[in-house]
Image (cartoon, rainbow, N blue to C red; front, side, top):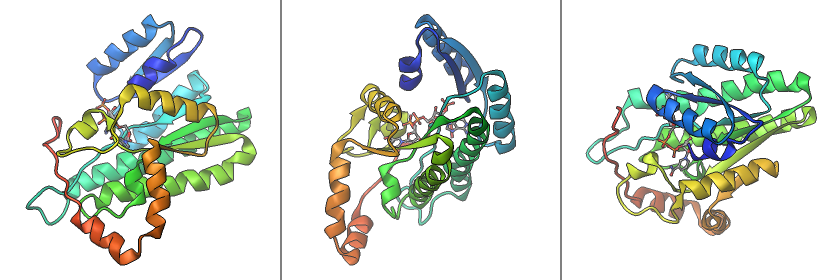
Length: 244
Ligand SMILES: NC(=O)c1ccc[n+]([C@@H]2O[C@H](COP(=O)([O-])OP(=O)(O)OC[C@H]3O[C@@H](n4cnc5c(N)ncnc54)[C@H](OP(=O)(O)O)[C@@H]3O)[C@@H](O)[C@H]2O)c1
């Protein structure tokens, strides 16, 4: 939402995707008021074939020069449950990994003959850690990171650049579901500004806020057994999802 609002400018066409028609319409009105031309598409990314067809249709009508794949689901194993919910693991794996990698590939396939383009994927610092209470979320983001790295290697010679955004905690409905303190929480507006700067600068990867970059360096000094012990001792719980 913040990203769309900030990208909305006269002379730009935004193609906005979302599940919720009402929310999508509200966002479209806001972006139109800021001078952008707006096309909306109500879509559920759990339907991968429909998503693939949709990006091809949208690209045919409005050749895409920047694609931001930000949709995501999060879930953690709640207290008293020895595993995550397998249904949620399936949905999360699709929305966080299978669909963004599919859509990125479809976008690159169209951008390459046109001479290039930019693709941004939204990962998470969770992808750096084997979180025992969020195995599916952390691994979906780790997979996405590996995809971004590999795709960038393969596509850079065709002038298609991928930017992997790696946020810590951002103040959105996703993090608001989590119980407990969220270290180094960043506002959605600040996150959007940083993301836009990173995409603009053509960064391959951008971790924010800086504390998580520093942690990345410090954790190299932690022996494996200690790392596992720390991860096993992390406490996490969440409120029930509004739309689950
Ligand atoms: N918030 C954080 O602390 C944080 C930290 C690290 C990474 N991230 C990542 O940042 C990205 C954005 O998350 P957020 O914080 O903005 O969370 P959010 O407020 O929960 O938003 C998630 C977005 O994903 C969309 N989405 C989820 N399932 C979908 C589906 N089946 N089909 C279509 N759209 C679907 C939602 O669409 P609707 O509007 O239709 O519901 C919503 O726009 C995610 O990839 C997340 O993993 C977030």
